[in-house]
Image 1 (cartoon, rainbow, N blue to C red):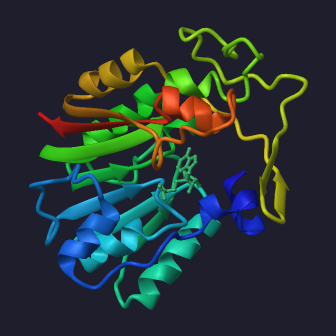
Image 2 (image 1 turned 120 degrees about the vertical axis):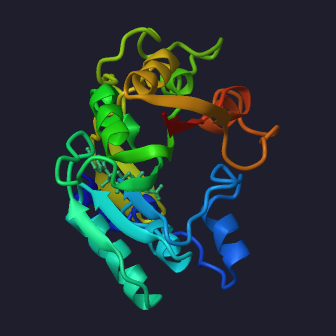
Amino acid sequence: MWDRLARAGIPYTRPQGRPPKSAAALRRFLDPDGRLGGVRLKGASVLALAAGGGWDAAVFALLGADTYLADISAIQLRTARDLARKKGVSIRTARVDMSDLSRFPAESFDVVWHCHSLVFVRDVRKVFLEVGRVLKPGGTYLTSTMHPTTLRLYGRYTGDGWAPRTSYFDERAMPYSEDSDVTWQFGRIKVVAPTIEFGHTIETLVNGIAVAGMVVDGLWETSPGDFNLDATPGSDDHLETLFPAFIQIRARKL
Ligand SMILES: C[S@@+](CC[C@H](N)C(=O)[O-])C[C@H]1O[C@@H](n2cnc3c(N)ncnc32)[C@H](O)[C@@H]1O
């Protein structure tokens, strides 16, 4: 599905912005909220997990990290490789499912950077066990995904309030209702992409990380941009002023 989205060129599969020049500015570009504050990247080994299609892997390499990019989509990998080449840095790439990182030896990475893709995985516990295995002791894991509450509420305004698609406790794939539109549209770009998404509860996320031998040392719930107080009542923008769009978790391997 991500190959199909990338072939259509939807913005989520394209690099956003342009990396600045100085190391400090590059670091802010990569990590605007400073979640990796204090983590040395020069000389570190970094796994950019499911980070195809964007700048992240190239920016880690520009910051002096020995960078491996792993993603399931060949096209997303190619886009990131091209960006790195344009910037004159080298990254290694692997086409893998994030639930199976067996091609990487245990304790190979100082940092696993993993943004916005757990939502596509049925069993996050497998992913966390793999991350816990490939991280070095003391290594840092940063992950983010769709917020499990808000994910259940998108497009579900009834006029009186929001009717969740499923119970918070039901972690099966988000169902499509008869009226759900599986077309991703951005301007003139349109692609039918019934992506399967999972809203993992916060309990599943945090305990899955703990069981994998990591300890959570930061958790943030955020929405993009400024709150839009003029958003149409019941719209997704309005929903994101009331509830967080994303959850981000940082953990350290014990
Ligand atoms: C929303 S994009 C995020 C891209 C990047 N992490 C970022 O934040 O710019 C989701 C990425 O996850 C990848 N992906 C989806 N399912 C995956 C899986 N099971 N294993 C590895 N990568 C996967 C997709 O190919 C896509 O590149």
